[in-house]
Length: 115
Length: 116
Image (tube, rainbow over all chains, first blue to last red; front, side, top):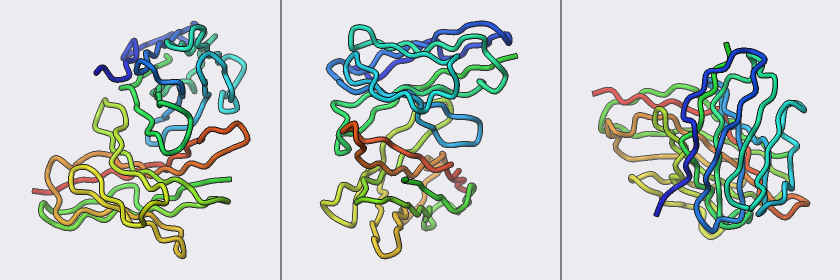
């Protein structure tokens, strides 16, 4: 079956622009996670959805970051007024449930470069 | 709070030699532990996971890891390195939180170089 897909794969934005990053999880997966991976670092948790409910957004770095999953499937991460420090790879992962014994499946990521 | 320390951001081994990537964790409760591999421009792929069933965990591509509670370690090994093993490897820990889901914390990664 299809894995997790993300689009676009690459995005270049001028400082101050808004961007929207899309994640298509594996069909039937209840849990969806967003991570930010800065250059040379491991992924860092941004936010977690269980179906359409955003249960944890403690990792979002500022109020410029917003995520949604309105129908419990596709999710969008939106960054308003992008800054250079937002440049990173944004990874989406889905899992059957949020329980630890279930693997998180990762998408290929969206590489965001803010100029 | 949970955390992961990966010792050595870069490791080089000769083809055919033993691969040893080190990981130490900190967790207030019995954790789940993972090793992921990331190839250039790709997402993370799970190599193996520890979920308390057995302390020696075997994964894909000939990798295995041993959970040692006394040392709070979960080192990744492979007896004989292949060129195709060159990638970045991430150790990760997760534990339940009040929301009832597992929040994963990743290490900074170790880049493995395999020398012909």
